[in-house]
Image 1: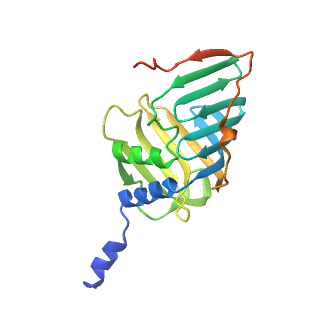
Image 2: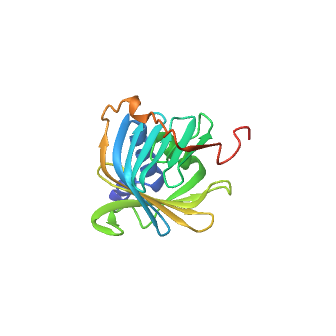
Image 3: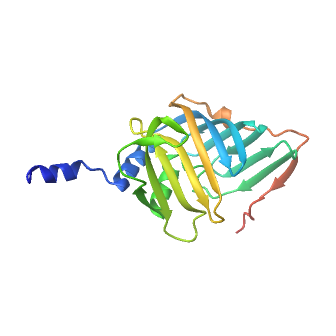
Length: 212
């Protein structure tokens, strides 16, 4: 029993090591596509997301219909059909469009502490008890981070993120559910080109000045 104890301890994967494995998994992904549901309070959005390494991201929504979010590594573009508005924001070259990428996860690993919610054993995914996931809780290390905590629900077999839940500074919960994930589909870069409607009003640097 005493001889077996060190071996058993070595078999227990720490939360940090499990997260590192997930980060390395995403860093090796060339591209992916998936369906996504976004919940922010009582608001529900749904659509499809495509990603191409290292920094191309696009989300086309079915709810709200025709809404689009595109990120090309330098500029974020959001089309809001209800307002007939195109919002753009210049970002730094190191900015990441979403945490569900290799760069995004590496950034989270630097800025958040990582722990299991209950342990390394997979547990039922809340609201979808037929699925089992490993849940990691990330807690911010500095006040500069936009989320107090981020909970990642990860499929243990594939080490892909099934759900991301973030609690904002105001205490609001925002969650992303990823389903029907397809990896390395050789998605062409042309799918990330977005031509905004000619009738839409343009609003540049809607989040902050690009000089700041």
